[in-house]
Image (tube, rainbow over all chains, first blue to last red; front, side, top):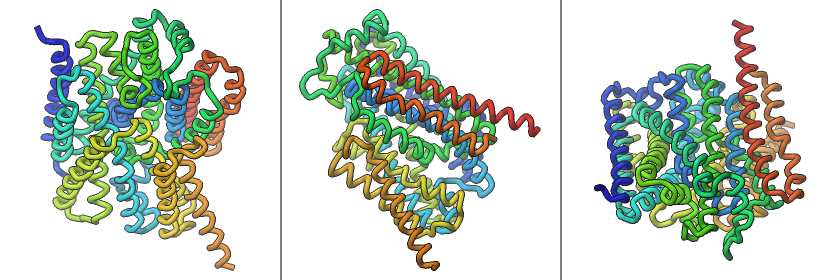
Length: 481
Length: 63
C-alpha cells in the first residue's frame, strides 16, 4: 500500500513527466525557425489558444496567491478579481488592434512594436530590458508557489528547496530546448486541469467543511482573528482606496505583459483573438471559487480543523493546498497539486521564453537566426536562476509580487497608446524618460513605503509618468512659439 | 468592430457600480458587500459578452 504522502507526490511528478513528454513530442515537430520558436508560426486555433492563454495568465497567483490574499486580508481580494475582469473589456478593444499591427509589421515581441512606433531601437531595447526585469517577480512568484505545493503535498517528505530545484531545472531545460509551440501544448493541458481543480475544490470544500456557504460565512463572522491578523470581511474605507487604485491602473497593464502579448501574437486570426477575450473571462470567473477556498481555510482554523497561523503570509499562500489536504484524500490532493504545479510551470515557462526572446532580439540586435536562438536560450537561463535565487532568499507574499510587476509594466501603457493614436507626438527620449520615471517611482514607493495611503504603487508611478509627459509636451509647445 | 465610443461607454458602465461602494460599506453588512462584489464581477463579464455580440452583429451586417 502506498503511503498517502508518497501517493500525492507520485501523482505530481507523474504529471510532470507526462507533460514533459507531451511537450517534447511537440518540440520534435518544430521546424526550428524563429517564427516557430517565438510565435508558433501564428497557427494557434481557438481551443488551444484559450486553454494556453488561460494557463499562461492563471498560475500560482490563482491557485495560491488569491486564496492566500482572501485568507490573510478578506475583502481586499475582490480588487484582484475585479481588475482582471475589467482587463478583458479593455483587451477586447486593444488586443485585436495589436494583433493586426503585429501581423502587418511582422512583430515578434512587444519591443518590436515600440521599435516601430518610435522608430527607435533604443526604445525597443529599453522596453525589452525593463519588461524582462519586471517579469522577474512574476517568475519568482511561480517558484515560491512550486515550493509551497511540494511542501504541502509531500507532507514534508521532500525538502521544498530540493523539489523546487528539480522541478525548475526541468522547466528551464524544457524552455531552452523548446519554443512557443511546446509551451503552448503544455499550457493547453494545464489550463484544462486547472479549471476542473479550482471549481471542484471551490464549490465542494465549504459544503464538506461547514455544510454550506451560509454556514461558512457564519463561522467567519463569529471568528476573532488573532493579534497581528488583518483579516476582515466587512470592507473599510482603506479597502476602497486600494480597490479604486487597483481597478483603475492594473487593467491597463494586464495585456502588456510580454508573455501575454506574445501568446496573442500566436493567434491564427483576429476573430480567434476576440472570441478568446470572452472565453478567457471564464477563467476570471473561476477566481470566485478560489476566493471561497481561502475563506474556507480561515474557517477551518476558526473551528480548529486546521492548526496553522493562517494570517502569516507563507501559510496563507498555502491555504488552497491546506484545504485540499485537510478535507480530501491524498489522491485528490495529488491531482489538485499537479494542476497547481503545472499552472505555475506553464506560466513560468511562458515568461522565461518571452523574456529570453526580448533580451536576445531587442537588446542585442541579433539578426542571424542561429545566434538569435542561442542568445534567447542563454538569457532564459540567466533570468530563471535570478528568479530562483530571489524566491529562495527573498520570499514575498505571492499576490504582492504580481502587483509590483504590474506596477512596472503599466508604465508602458501611456507611451504605447499615445504613439498608436498620435504618432510623432512624443519623441523617443521623452518616452524613455517618462517610462523610466514611472518605474523608478514604483520601486521607490514599494521599497521605502510599501504603500502610501493604501493606494496602489502603480498609480503613483503612472502619475509621475504622465506628469513627465505633460511637462515635455508643454515645453515642446512653448519652444514652438 | 465595436466603435471607440461604444467601447468607452461599456468601460464606463463597468466602473459605475464603484460609485455605490461607499454606501455599501456604510451598511456594514458582510453578506451584502460580498454579494455586491461578486455580482459586480459577473456584471462586467456580461458587458464583455455584450461587446462581443455587438461586434459580431456589426461584422455580419458588413459581410
